[in-house]
Length: 80
Figure 1: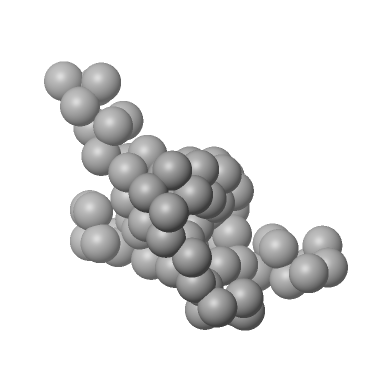
Figure 2 (figure 1 turned 90 degrees about the vertical axis):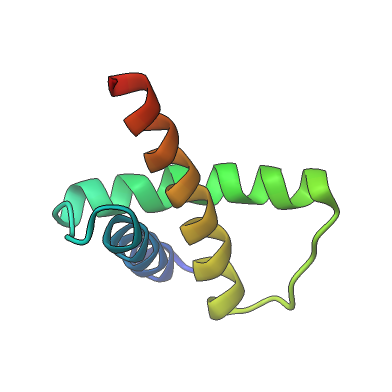
């Protein structure tokens, strides 16, 4: 995937994760950061569990969204 595609996937995944956890978006830069970190966390977790998806945009967005939700959940637990 090219650089622009990665940014679009990151922003989309971060936005979806922030909507799922808090009901509102966090802003473009925070969503991008969440998507990138979520992609790393999600890839690691799914690989650890032995789960594989068909390659493509939807699987990348899904993996990054799962990871971003986990990151947001952990962040909420740490902030308490």
